[in-house]
Length: 296
Image (tube, rainbow, N blue to C red; front, side):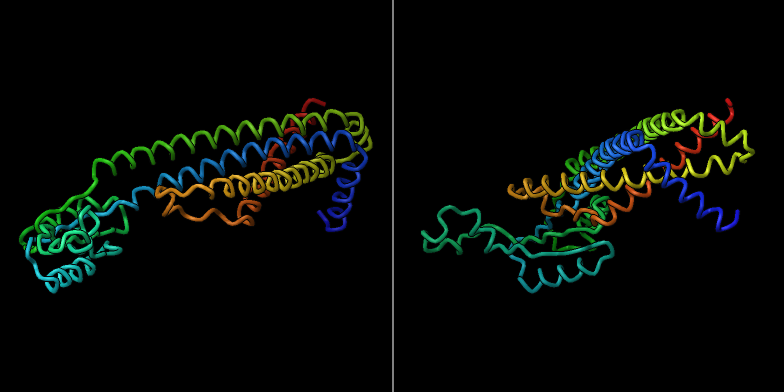
């Protein structure tokens, strides 16, 4: 197809949108609502998945040193653990700080620190929470770390969180696919109505010798326009709702949200919605026009 013909057909698609104002408005609003529901649901599922994935990263392995161990020995063990592959951070929780935090009489009893029965503790955080069990077994190995008295981890809680994360991922993925199919069906039926409303115009074009491609392309371009414009409106609604929810949730401070990853960039959200709207609009209009041309 020549460039001049493509420009003519694009202009024809624009004129058809303006000429059928009421039908275009109905199609555009339907696409916007459908894409807003899809985008809002998928964005919510995405943030829920991020939340579930972030929880295991907050758990640490507590490595208790043997009682009476010198601070120099403790620092040496800390450096050795930090050098292990997969270890993200190693923080020292000193016996003095632990005694201060757990002794209600601290500061009132003169010899409080002299009676300190606690030992130093190293708080180890691994890069991948799934390595927790392996790292705990390594740190509890007396041959590798004879200075360590005991190792405590939260493997039972971590396993429950991993199960929850998998559940969110699987259910969220299935729900996103079903919502996408439902949205595509709604948009396709809407575009089919716009094609059906112009059946006489299509028939006249066929009688004067217009090729199927010449008839189809302006309507496909219209469908793409409805998809892009509707998705852009939907993107604005989704981003506005997300901003309001974030502002409201930000009033509540919770340790569960300490490592919550930042939300996706508004441009990324808008770009994904527009691309999805263009894809659904193109698919819906192409299928609708093909079926209609096949019947007449």
